[in-house]
Image (cartoon, rainbow, N blue to C red):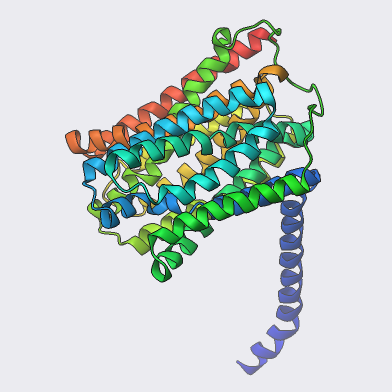
Length: 428
């Protein structure tokens, strides 16, 4: 036995050291490849991402809005639901209006005016405490606040280089996700120390600080860097006759509505079917954030390097969404909850950044604001209808039927995406 030990050591130690060195080299290479996906952005894009992170982290009111109305203002569930409907309507109208104004007066003025005005309105909204006044206030503030989003998309198309435009969208999306991850924690701390009123002051202040920093660090640029892949359509081509884009908008609505089940019906399902507590559901949602953070930029970078058509990843994302809800149909094993989150995350990674890129490239320069306004409006409408449709199916028919319906919507988006690919190919 001792002889076996003496014979083992001379061979095992070099093998172990060699394996460790190879593993270390592979980790370093993977880390370098990941970091390289963040290279090549202009200074303005990095500033825009940082400003977006500060602004989104400061949006502390939104995660606690329903809780504030129910616990602090003593609204009924029905009243809370109606306020959120007006919230969604304001968001949709603001997205459309922001796109129109971005074409008329320029994205820079819209971004500055939107955040500066909404920051001041957040200070005032805390004094609207009746049901009707809060409905009007939330509608008004979301019209102003969500004018920022299409203008911000146009700014990315202006400041980003054509070859890394989709990665620039992805960088700003990462900033949004990180901001939303940090915001609720800070919001909870503010509520504990100051109360709900402190959220409105914090939100308004961060809006104003972030846009003032943007105006100091970034100067307005009138022209887009490159003509690049902008629309085939001539200047006189009306957007309502752009059939591929209109179908694409419906695809974006379907994919977003299905994905937003992650924030509405799926957490309820965790508790009612499997008895998960808030911490366990939170860990599953954290898995979504981690997967997006570590995988989205490498996926986008690979597709850009290989010059893959932007509609194909959207199709893959729709397939992943369908698989995520197919997994929930097997209720006998709790592991399907992890599979559901993984496939939903992959759907988000493939569908959302390339949807931004397709809408941007499809838009003629003089109509980019309108195109991006309608595109962002689909997300607002999807957010509004997602909970309504999901809750209606759950209350009437149960979770299983809701998963079937959401899976069906995902499959429909797959078919429509293939049709858009055919239409665009025929145009070319």
